[in-house]
Length: 308
Ligand SMILES: Cc1cc2nc3c(=O)[nH]c(=O)nc-3n(C[C@H](O)[C@H](O)[C@H](O)COP(=O)(O)OP(=O)(O)OC[C@H]3O[C@@H](n4cnc5c(N)ncnc54)[C@H](O)[C@@H]3O)c2cc1C
Image (cartoon, rainbow, N blue to C red; front, top):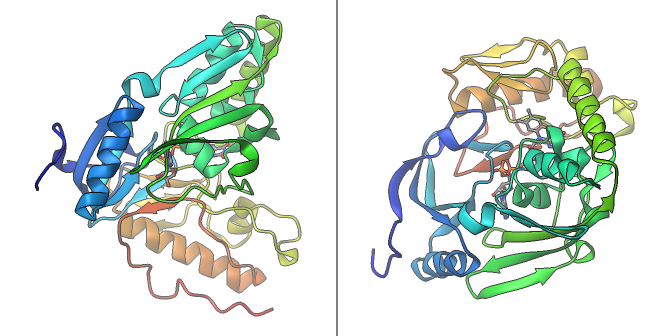
């Protein structure tokens, strides 16, 4: 390929950059440690007509078994560092939320506690509007810088179109940095909050499994009668349901558990069966929370008729 920036790797195994450890390879892969390098890589992809995929911690990502026929990017270097400026935190978008939460606690800063159990990066959290225990990302976020093929710009939370597990970021728009304004607090108190949240999480969700967290979003449908996706899957008999190397966790039915042999096709087939069963039982159509990278064929039966 002409004019390719140095250090682009070819035929790169993406599954190991995801927490569920499934899927294929990227045609091209590169790391960006600065905004300049990121823009250069995005401009290269635009010139080549190549699609761009960003991988944060891969904690909400399912890669096609056929891989991704484009340029996959990961942030590192300066774009994975945390700096403190008084009560403000400047984070590279590649910083992991649990690290940001723990560092802030040590500095006696409150506001990012909700991130302690979300194993994603700041960039992935902005794209997905990640949340837990009612802590809202937008409450402390001042702005993000966003790199595209044509340069770098800034967006405030009001300009990010946040709604449930969504932002208005499009493919090719990469969050590079974020600034948070936090509240001074007693470090011991913030650390105690984090410890409490970790314990609560351990009780409610499986740990140490290969998963991407919530498979489906919680439905906004009166037929769900206030139940979460996990509760609906459970009611539909999906707890422990298995397809190939993938099963719905015995501890939390909305979590897929890869036993180490699952393909993405196994996971998609499992998701389709869970979705079918919930629909049959309640009429609710569950929508995936997990993001797919690359072209996948949804199993036969994925398209369900809405009946009301
Ligand atoms: C055990 C477990 C528990 C979880 N608990 C929670 C929870 O409590 N709350 C919650 O909200 N989520 C939770 N998740 C899901 C996941 O951690 C979040 O969605 C997280 O925000 C994803 O971040 P990531 O960096 O891993 O993104 P990835 O999974 O790598 O990517 C997700 C999407 O974000 C895009 N993206 C990543 N980085 C950038 C960037 N810099 N710029 C633009 N787009 C980007 C990707 O292209 C992709 O579309 C959990 C996941 C696991 C495995």
